[in-house]
Length: 87
Image (spheres, rainbow, N blue to C red):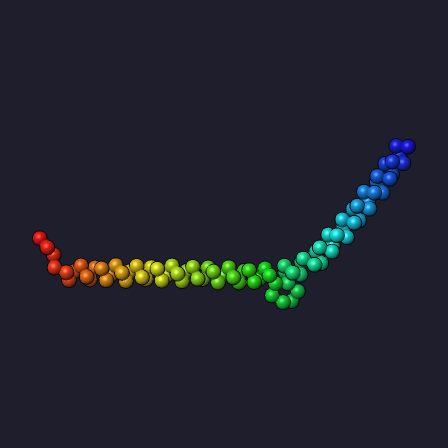
């Protein structure tokens, strides 16, 4: 009786294992090309390109902010140099 129950359980587990394996294969065949691409630009490469563009925009913004600050400081220095000092 116990042996037959173990055999039935083993058969059921093997069925689950086969079903799970089939499902994993199905998911991999659908998801993997969508992420990695199938000869065309994939979603992952599109995200990488957007990240690169965002980094470049950040560096440009930093450069513009530094240049604006330097120009403002220079203009302030010139303005203070030519204004009369009150004693």
